[in-house]
Image (cartoon, rainbow, N blue to C red; front, top):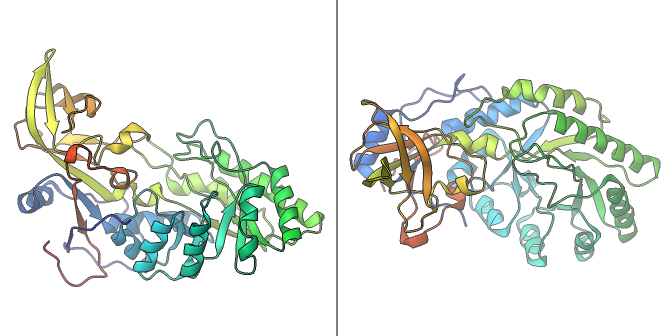
Length: 406
């Protein structure tokens, strides 16, 4: 199910030329605007700025020329993000029937989608095909055989595994096959009459080094050549996945520098190979700012505790499973800072956002601002303890001329 958009607000913004970067640095909502939004809507809030989505999409497009970007909905499946990227000319990476429903409801042409979950139910396949998405991913024989009934309608990418201990989430642990197994799958597919379109891989979330992409591309190039040498149908597509890093608490390479060796490796592929990618976090991490307010406070073992109206079970859910050291600070800046604790609102003792953050003395109602909150926050928030999820405020969605006030 898509995340609901509660309020859409038009704020003054310069005209944006197609395919041009918006800012050298991504603008963040000002403190004044944040205060105005809280006055109008209360807290907690998640402020989604579509200009930041545009900026990141264009930056990656410029860094990977010739690569078709399929936005992976998983980190932020929000209708405003889909509409913004659709206007930008993006394609989309789907993994569930709910994601199929979301892009279909926003008018995304089915030919601009792929379905990349390596393990699917028959209903998942049928839902995607009914929408018109016909490119799927497999990584084993059992999964390939699910497509026998649909062989006249589908094209398949075989996902390879390239383990990456340096990535925060090594996605090749759960999915993917060896190059040798890929050849077996492709050979068997020919016997079944199922068309294999190409190969795919994902080197892992928040991948620190482009070397992982380079080695994976080189291995896939060998598979592509082996397929041709064996007389199997030629492959036409390589999906290099996602995992492009964003800066949370530490610096990462600028995206053009990060992608330079990747482009060099891609240039060695046969000219007939079309390259696609599945960026998710890189597109949306910087587009959301969290606003929470202090709803209570105490002193425990000599340290101030501030209890917020949002926490681990809400917008900060990524702190439990993701490498998401969000930049967090108080809107109030004056006063000496002391080591403090930020706790969430629920009755669970693990609901602590930070147990060592330097803050000035805060009062009830003061605001805590967290940046870079676009990926794996709204998407994984819950209503645990019946604390409602933060309201979503959408800024700079320029395809709508009408201002919604809630």
